[in-house]
Image (cartoon, one colour):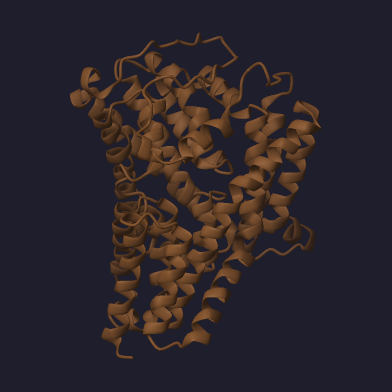
Length: 475
């Protein structure tokens, strides 16, 4: 088939996936497989080869990140059950004080807590942020809501072990240690700068509490209080926001009555921190070309996260008992199933796109001496996210489209992964479950949520790509 025909059919396939998800409410998994099948059949792969590519793409991405995603989600489920997040927020408040809480909370969520399923993490942390808002100042609700939105969304696609970051690394063949280091280098300034920009706008009059906040009875938590109330309150999310809201609320319900606080917080988080440290150590040794068989083994991401999972399980047994650990594991398996399948079929579409030769076609139009490919992957991911409303789907699809051209251009694949992640953050809006959760749990009106979530995360998206572009000059 001609180059033009392949480009047209690829465009039609991606548009069909978006249309099926948005207009006809098909499940994203089904939509991605249908799009992959259409692309393979219409570009001359044939029935047998199309099926083989779809299956192989699914299997390849699962071999890369399947167990990693499962281990990360299971660790997060146990941390949630142990009440570690509530206690961590209390510690941050005591250390940094209320005025700096937007920065402390958003950076902590973006860098440390990405093993926890996004909706669950949001439902746990939002009531805590809402109680803190009056202490932050007159625009406290705006600043805390924006901090939550930016930290959550940036972390999921830029920071290992966020499921989006894991999927991008697997699709593009980026070593997870490298993804962890460069993601950390990018996410910290992205979050800090974006929160600062939004705080400046809010304090200069861009936030109107009468129009941007729902009026409710606010329970203020004392500075010295260590037991947090996980009450949601506020307005009810729109009915069409999806069953994920109620499911996440049920999954994330942790009361201070059920959570023991007699174990040091650092002990609860130590296994997760240790596993991330092992992964980073392995990446640093690789860059320094230092080889040690024992360190190489334990720093492999699969082994490092397994060590973290086992350690978290043992800590959980001593903290909350075996029964609740098993309950958390069961919840984690339930959460990880959808993530794994969605990531896998994202790999199927990427594999089909590579098989039809799109990479060779695009390679004719770009050279490695300019940033156009990175800007293109950012734009593709941004457009897909606006249409679909899923950060993970848009990032995976955009990366899959341009992944084949990375070797031709000489670009480091980690740059494409970060650019795709940055683009997928653009314009989180009413098609996103996160949007409605933030509106309800933070006591905002739709107008207010458009400011804190849609504009806030879009600012982070632009800041991130502006930071990624200079990286292409040194990588």
